[in-house]
Structures are given as structure tokens and as C-alpha cells.
Length: 121
Image (tube, rainbow, N blue to C red):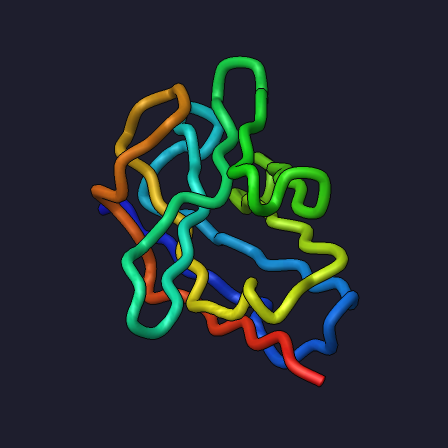
């Protein structure tokens, strides 16, 4: 069964870095595209980024482009989201998700419980 577990969240000061991890099980990671989503209190979930399975191409929302970067380690069945120059507006619960497709964008058919990222002085 497909299972995704996020980790790496925490409290960070504005401008600081943080790396999130998405550990996958129940499927072969390199066949799936993985997306990162986030949801702030009182707001709807939004797509942040996505990495495809075929060629590893990555895509980013305008709000994070140039600051966030996705990567994958298929040997560890893990996808990462490196976040740099964090802003208070980035505060949210971050989720990784997949829809069993190999290309981006993805629907959040399968997703984890999320990890909290708080950016504050």
C-alpha cells in the first residue's frame, strides 16, 4: 500500500534554510511523480513543487521559485524539498503527495500527515 511520511519541519528564522524529507513505501519511487503541497491556517491547500519520474524535471510555484529545490534519492525511496531564504509567508503544514502518475502536475490522491514549518523571528 502506498504510504508517504513527511519529516524535517520545525521552527526557523526568516532567511534561514530547512530541508524536508518525504519517505515513500509500498511502491517503487522512481516510477512516480511526487508533489509538495502546503496549507496555512485558514487557507486552502496549494501546490508548491513537483518532480517527475521520467527525467527528474522539477516545477515550482511562482511564490517559491528560486528559493526551493526538489531532489530525489531512489535508493533511499526519499524525496527532498530544500527550502532556502524562508519567509514568514512560507509558514504552513507541508505535505508530499502522488497520484501514481509519472509526470507533473500530480493530484493528492496519496499523501502523508504533513510536517509543520514555522518561519518566525
